Length: 437
Image (tube, rainbow, N blue to C red; front, side, top):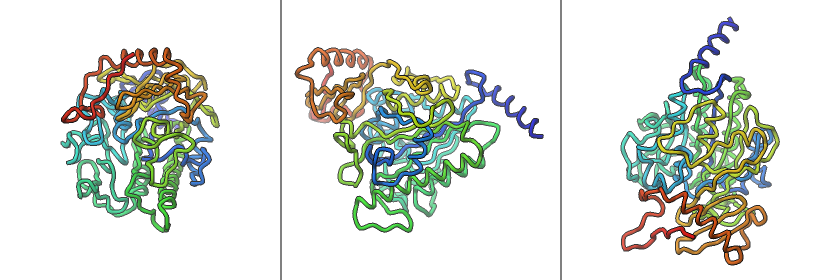
């Protein structure tokens, strides 16, 4: 009987459309934390207890140069599309246009079960430009969605304080479920894993609203200070991740599952989080806002290593597709690149520069980072020698500034403004300056 089941599984795996290569398909789990800083991980020396994430980091590869955008929706759009923000036009109040294909669409069409538990923030709510049902995640490649569509909810009542309405959903229908949001999302993820179709691989996107405000203490916890509340929220998320990893282990899926963890942006100032020793915070293009604590665990990756490969959120789709053997089919050419080979070989591959940012933007091309403020001011940092961005080299390295600016301008020349974070405001205020040599 066991042999028969194995043969059926092998036949099913080889028959999955859209796959490349003959190896058995891998499951993929992406986990995204919200507003959690570089300095809030135990594996970065934090006093906040994150034993589950520390264990994952020890079992996999710490991604020491993983970059995101400095606010929520922009990173999520890059993850789902493999594109720069100025190409998608996404901001926190827009949603993702329908002409962009998404990561889960690839996996779904290739035969994977695709589930999302958590924060979407890419359209479908009344405070978004794109509000229709067609903008929900279960209409954009996920077979199943459970969680919140907007940017933030109360952890217990699940009310979006921007709209004053319930923002907790199960496949398009409001879900009036009682419980702490972190635990509900982990419970749903575990349920999906345990009740899955065992003859098909799966893609799970688990996107916590922790530790985004408004902060609420987990059940049974008490605190008198904001910092203690924040720490408890992060520790609760870590425990929830641990429960999901236990479910994967119990199902004997550890060796056939790639797990990627990162944060959507740096910690917000005044909420209790830390981006130390990096400069800056959520909202800005300095390292504290855009350099994410990140790790990846899976087959072919050497446990306990630290990768210095420069990556950004737009690399996730092509990289995970390569790991899983899925042929990516983006509607528009990727800005992100596939770095899977570099991760498995523990090498650093040469890669094109990439743009991150919101109002102030940055172009990263190892080892350099060229920052351009809204007023056109430029700053240049050598991140290898100066990760804290303490010395602006723009004045003494004008040739490097010119070279990077020309590269940046050439790359972005084909981008037509879609009204994203650099959209001009009425009266001309807030207009994005041109990036030019």
